[in-house]
Image 1 (cartoon, rainbow over the protein chains, first blue to last red):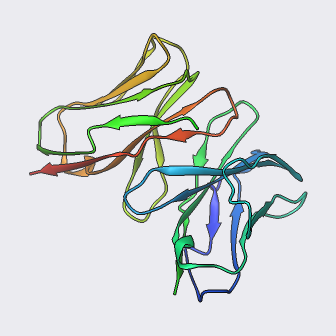
Image 2 (cartoon, chains in turn yellow, blue):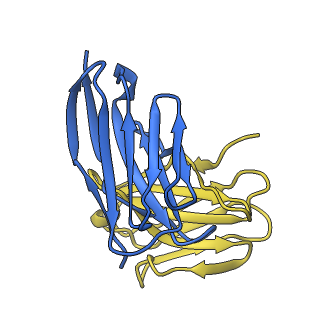
Length: 112
Length: 111
């Protein structure tokens, strides 16, 4: 039973480009969460999704960031027109209906 | 928004010593979790606490869920070099609500 799979592990983008981060939850998990971690900081919640629905996006920046979790396929966190301040580690977690969070290994985004 | 205050920020200890770290919150959580993060990896769950007053052990690790539901501590006994890493507390209001994380305790173990 594979864990939470995130790809790519490392992503380098020039300022103004788009970044797409993917997360495949554990089998049987229908809840997906995205977190951002800056160096020397804890994880900050961004968005919580269930299949085809955004449940809570209170941690998402109002512009340039979007997330989806389609009926088929992985959850996608999309950052448009990236800026240097978007450089961070982005973690995805998934959980089943009963709760309990499993984290992926993260995507490290570097904006140059 | 909700915040967790985690202390200490960092610790340097001798191998074999016991370690204690804690988290406090201004609001109530119904779930407390403790994670360890190694460099370049995601957080890995160490201990989950679901009931106020609960004391749970996992090998050399022991954690407690405070009676007020606003605090938790983690103890590591007889530390070893592989305990090195960043330890995070996290709280959730209920089953699937998003986690709120502390800023972490960076543990260094001197052999």
